[in-house]
Amino acid sequence: MPSLLSLAALGLAFVSPAAAVILQNGQVRETNFPNTRIDPSAYTFKTYPADAPEISYKGRWDSKHVSWWSAPGIKFGYTGQTVAITFGNLTSDGVLVGYRIGGLDWMFTNITAGATHLLVSPDTPGANLTGPIYPWTFELRVTNWAYGVQIRSVHVAAGERLVKIPDYPRRIEVIGDSLAAGMYTSYEGLSSWAYGLGAGLGDTEYSITAYPGICVADQDCWGNPRGQVHQWFYTSDTSYRASVIHGDNPEPWDFSKHPPADIVVINIGTNDNNEHNNVSTEAYIDAYTKLIQGVHGKWPKAQVIVMSLWLGFYQSGNTYLPGAPGGWVKEIYDMVQWFNSDAYLRNPTVYDGVTKKTARTGRRAKPFVHYFNTTGILQHNDIAPQWHPTDVGAIKVASHLQQYIRLKLGWDLAATGPEVYHETLYWNDESGY
Ligand SMILES: *[C@@H]1O[C@H](CO)[C@@H](O)[C@H](O)[C@H]1NC(C)=O
Ligand SMILES: *[C@@H]1O[C@H](CO)[C@@H](O)[C@H](O)[C@H]1NC(C)=O
Ligand SMILES: *[C@@H]1O[C@H](CO)[C@@H](O)[C@H](O)[C@H]1NC(C)=O
Ligand SMILES: *[C@@H]1O[C@H](CO)[C@@H](O)[C@H](O)[C@H]1NC(C)=O
Ligand SMILES: *[C@@H]1O[C@H](CO)[C@@H](O)[C@H](O)[C@H]1NC(C)=O
Image (cartoon, rainbow, N blue to C red; front, side):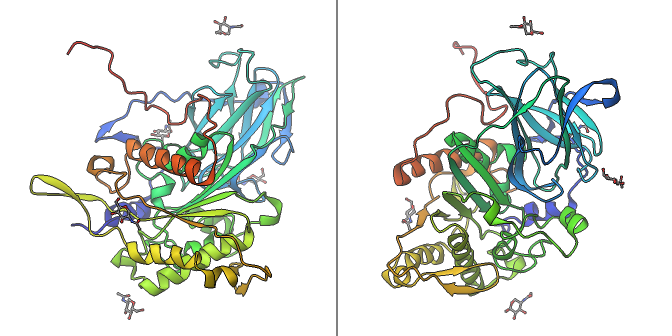
């Protein structure tokens, strides 16, 4: 069996310019992304700065309004039929973004650094539909984890205004690597199971702190200089872009300025488990334990769901079998059991990214770590040749997680119809063959 992710993670080292074509099973995918760039001097706008309180930032953004990690976005309400955005020059030139009006399907366009893009105009499908979502909402998400946008300003037509849209009451955070970031799915972050989980639950804010190739252990893995046990506490990810924009001084994520997540789903270890990165079992479990204690320290009420790891499948004679045991299966399960032990709950520990200390609760803590068994969800054809879920595989993982969260933690499935996974409408329109 080839070692998992060796191919995939290497892809990271060759992050291509944003203008690569989308390949689908080796064929060029036909895309018709409209060119939305305009010359703003030809328009009369009412303009809001990037820090306008009406603009909600989703996921992690830094103090310069630069986006990080997977599927970060912005959302706001607006009046009129015009929305334009001026992007800062720290935008990855040509980056593909998805955007939508209300609950209509995602549209896609490539963004030019430093340019203004007209994303909603009276000609945009649905721009003139008057309900039921009112005020009209606009949402934008970056598709690729390694690229980002910088928001400089948002414009509406003269005489119109932006409207603050309250956040949904529930919050989910997914921490992971390429498997959560959406590597090798059609629209990357916007086709990932992590996004599908957050968007598919409905009425839920979601943030995906996942980056391809990253380990949980704090060491270089496939060129990512730090592991999640360190990086999760920071605003920016481990990309080359981050090293250019933030150098050696990444901004710590200000947990006090953002509401806590209610549920944190973690899928990490496939890169630690790859012999290329030489992470010992002890170092892996130590870092993973600290990461969970870090989540518990920052968000004491969050429920943590630990996913078992999966590897790919291989053909064995006349069938397919799972690849070598999915990576530290027993150790991950034992770690979850340890978090649920009486000994631990009587004396829980929290971690702030630097030091561990006993959480002085004065009473036995409530169990907060859950085990999500991924065995049996994916089959060989749900994993693409580069060892990552296909779009269908991502949808399966997201759907099972949603149902697990409903049954185990009592969340209802609140999505009401708007598209989650773009271009997954496959159907048979002939019934007679
Ligand atoms: C837009 O981005 C997509 C995804 O990276 C790419 O396939 C396409 O070539 C880009 N188009 C332009 C005009 O840059
Ligand atoms: C980037 O934009 C900032 C502010 O808008 C401007 O001051 C700066 O000169 C620009 N830098 C480059 C390299 O264009
Ligand atoms: C909305 O715009 C479309 C296309 O421009 C037009 O066909 C339709 O009649 C308009 N609907 C309303 C309610 O104005
Ligand atoms: C792997 O780690 C072990 C223990 O830390 C060390 O002795 C060994 O030299 C490392 N191997 C490589 C190839 O880095
Ligand atoms: C995970 O699921 C598989 C398949 O049902 C089962 O064999 C295994 O025992 C489960 N693991 C745990 C820890 O429950």
